[in-house]
Length: 197
Ligand code: SF4
Image (cartoon, rainbow, N blue to C red; front, side, top):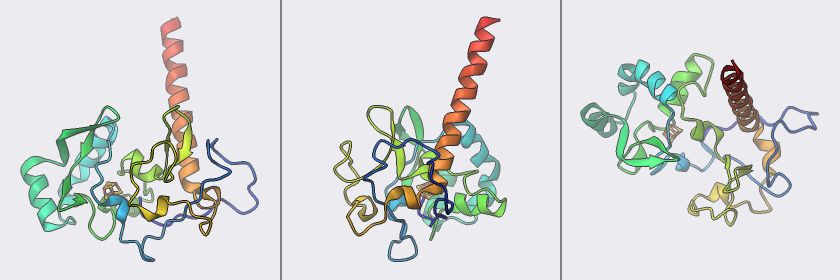
């Protein structure tokens, strides 16, 4: 989340993902160009079990890069907020109004980048943002006034006419969401083959 992404490859006309509001959604990440990383403020993203396990493998090193207050809290109580469940999954905690992993940027993003994969340790919801599933289960771009968007204080979700069309700025996120669909489909196929055995 919060890191500018390369646009959709030049000349690419077929979107990698079907987005419910592809024709109208507008979005541009301005992290480092006026935005301080606001999508990580009071953000408690849900985390899958496999991502939880991955984060734990690097937690000792991650702790050394965290804000002092966040580090103290995580060392004392862990990085999962026991009082929050999002989308049926455990959620990352907040300290002093910021996700514990935020420290002038996402620490998990930085660790992944060092290994050549910025998404490796970040929760899925973070690296797909602002792409998400709407209330009908379709991929869409979060926008103020669409699907009862609650994050109205985030200017990047305003979708004003001066912003570029989201399909031109969210190439990475669309590719990653499409990969997630492919992964789920493969798992379902495997499940049905095993059920038929
Ligand atoms: S995990 Fe990283 S990208 Fe996600 S909210 Fe926390 S600091 Fe931001």
